[in-house]
Image (cartoon, rainbow, N blue to C red; front, side, top):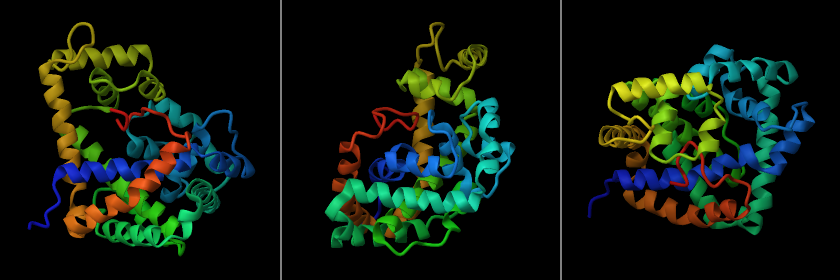
Amino acid sequence: MSDAVDLGMVRQLWRLLEPVHAVLYYAPEAFEEAEAIGYPIDTRWPSYFAWRAAPLGDASTELVTATFYSFWPGMIARYVPAVWEVAGATKVLAARQRAVDRALRAILGDRIDSPELAEAAGLARRAATAAGTAGRPLAAANAALPWPDEPHLVLWQAATVLREHRGDGHIAALLTHGLDPCEALVSFAAVGAAEPAVASREWSDADWRAASDRLAERGWIGPGGEVTTVGTEGRDAVERLTDELAAPPWRALGAADAGRLAELVMPMTMAVVGAGILPQRSTLGLGR
């Protein structure tokens, strides 16, 4: 029997681990920790930019804009570097770990001390350790952080390294197919991304129209913004290349252990989803 991991499994593992990572941005415990160190919580964005960018250090507007890619640069400039004036990256990282610890304990309950979680954490860490970080700044920054001791935090950190590894690769795929940040969102919206998700990146109507015009000239979308065959094939190619670039850590883990990880993580992911804290659809396409 082959021990090769196919691209379907690569995508399945992303979909299973992404909700585990995403508790940081939506759990009430995370907002409590954010408020405790001085961030306003009437909107999630101050803590989002702080939580996600903190592994990069007190990162500049330009660095966050480059690595986050799909956000309107003016939106990022509204929050970065101001978030570091409230709390430096070292303090943010400590609060981030407290937030994840509290959130996962609340969601997973007795599973926190289970042998299944410990096994899942070990497998996920093996995959994350095998993830190459050359040309992948967010993956590299998270991979450089010290590993925690508790299995649920190991699982979360591994999920975070792997999702940023995939995300860095996704940017490479978008660039390969000639999609700038706004075009990436317009093309994604054309194939069914939820409007609130893409609108949250704050591109202006003028930016959106200009990106739409550029995509229409390339044959990706029609006059009414509808996706064309060329656009569908182009987005499929982006996602396929993203999967291919995300595959090496899973191939290093092997099909048997990757399948075992999927089996172990499934009930934990369902617990996160069942907690009702995550949006049903996002720019990552988890609801597609």
